[in-house]
Image (tube, rainbow, N blue to C red):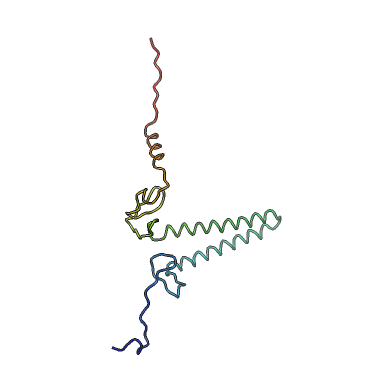
Length: 158
């Protein structure tokens, strides 16, 4: 067999993971992102552009008074912040399931805690991940709801 220098071929480099930490491999053609992450980014850019265009139209319509135009500008800023928060929430919902503490891939075996996070088998106990959920008050409230106070009517003595 010929050596790689003689044929001019290079051995492929080790695969590199996506910059969005989605456990898929990236490529230089997709800006160091997996194809899924690149498609999501393109869709988000289109949505953001549509929102910006809509907010600009609102600003143009409300140029009759300066107060209304200031309100429209602040509304556009708030809308862009809302869009960013929606994007981050959708990313976290759509992403692969990973432990919040150690970032280990958990798949179907992940444990949802009452604090709202997902954990692996090691970190699913509340003392292992410093859970902010107040189990004591939750237990007291559950007992209070299950056992209402019953007061009987007083009897007249004869």
